[in-house]
Image (cartoon, rainbow, N blue to C red; front, side):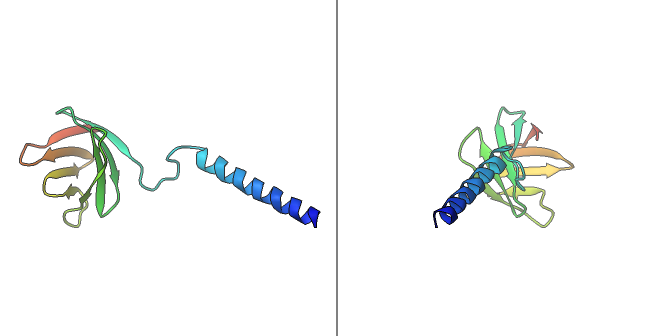
Length: 106
């Protein structure tokens, strides 16, 4: 009986160790929705995660906000106040009625 218990304990420890090694191998490794960092011409810093039907955007390190996709092409995300646009790989960020600011990074 002790032998079966010892084998079970070793098995649990091995599985626990494998789980840590795989998850700690690379931060963000295998993440289907990685975060991309951008710097905009107006000084705004964005951390953007594209999620298909929405974009999760952190502005200047604040908590992320979700912007729903506008239309079917998935290039404009807006909540009516903040707007993220991606056209031909170029990202821009706009707030309210202000002219959108071009952003670089990714």
